[in-house]
Length: 320
Image (cartoon, rainbow, N blue to C red; front, side, top):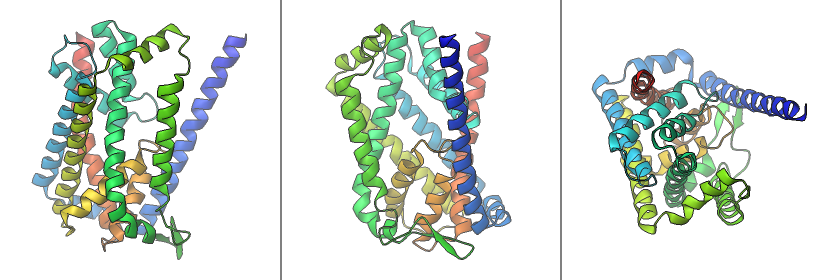
């Protein structure tokens, strides 16, 4: 009876969390689209240069391939790189098209486990892959922070005559330091205290962190920088396709900050937070809300287009 109650309680918590995330995404999207105008955004997206949109899709594929190289660093030798690339595309598909229902990493981990028979290694490799990716992202965001500080202090989203997201002179300048502090606290607790290490599977999971070499970690961080650079290049390419005239250095300031803010797990795959961040930051350099929103959606659509190949990989794996 107690086990059933605990299971039910866990299901209720997950449902409430999912509702909360949908509410956050929905509220932010409403504010952004109310300001920008749905028709204006759609018209801007329709006018994007098709060749540059496809170039952004290709850049996402390139970033996924580099991410696959990073993931492979933390798995025992034996599987070819194309297998990791296939699983990464599969995970991207589920993360994009089934957000909040089943994380792409769960599918990646499951199918890697089916190939290797090592559940703890699959879990540890995915965690380290994501951890190093987020570490590199925060490093880039921290480097961009001093240059982006004037924009973060000034940003505000006017809706129906009111100003949101910038209640005082600090604007959003406080958000990145808070995220950095939370990440450092999490890292300290996770790697030092190793909660749950008395359970064998979790103990084996932690054990892999002791055997990862410094060389693999450094390579992982460097590959993560490449992934983020490709993401910046994709957004810049899309901006040119929409006719946005903003210099490339500003994208190296804004995109890491936008990606970091979108990674906060209070929305559905960053939906809403990402769009609001585009409007706020690019609006601070004169980009119209409808155009900034269109750029955000165009980036999402380029990712979704590339992620559709993950469905093919999934069906191929299921058939085999």
